Length: 334
Image (cartoon, rainbow, N blue to C red; front, top):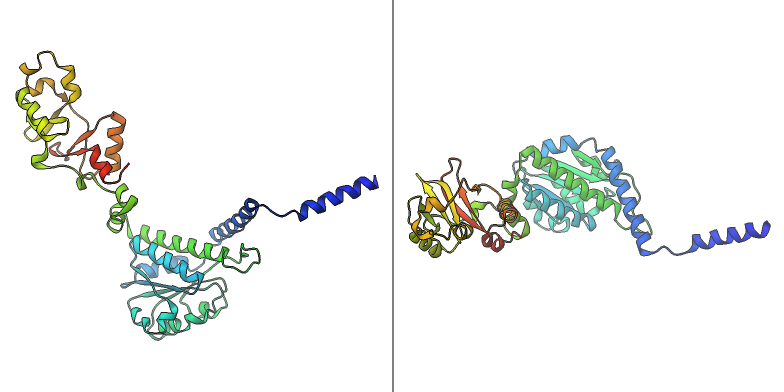
């Protein structure tokens, strides 16, 4: 019995001394950081609502600053604010002491990030804010720090351990600061009524811009449209379809779309086709889209119906355009 207990304790000791795998280490890092975020969500900084209210009233820009890793976080927060309706700018604290304080005006507000609240490089910015009565928001872990003492509003980070192996490298603290910046940005954008249309104005390029494009941005108009009347002879209808090159024609009456003729309609009506009128061959009440619809939604309609083009109509069903699947692909919507 004693021998078995001895061997069991030796196995446990050996297991405890086995090195953790990279995946085990990663899981522990994420566990520590997610626990801190959960703690912050449950214990939101008391000044958060007041901070949002004050930043909404800023007539100039929200200036974000920090040193080291906090500086990198500050740049990201400034970029997020600027892209979601709150004019913002990052100012490097070292450069601020050598002339860039002139970028910070009485119409601005300051958000300074320092985990310790004692970052020496922030001293000149703090003094500048107090001299000119510029609203100052502190993001820090220490409530009794110099930064928190000088600030008008303090957003305290949770008292949680860093996730690095030696407990010193900024990990948990930077994650929390960045998440708090996201929370500020979202609260501000919702209070401003910032919508998808506004977001598109600041993101015209890349995938985000493509996903928010409207049909009106790419649709064909005017003389580009293949248009016939209900009593147009099929010979002339075929010439119009061929000339415009979309494989479809709009049948209109009083400027309103009343039907469409596609290649499929032509195949279904081959017998005696040339003796008919456009209205005899057209499919009535066609599916359409609107100019203000998202291009992604128009593409989804085309894919669902296995068609390559959609006519665009206004609220009164008047024909105003045509969007082709190739237009969506060229715009980067896939």
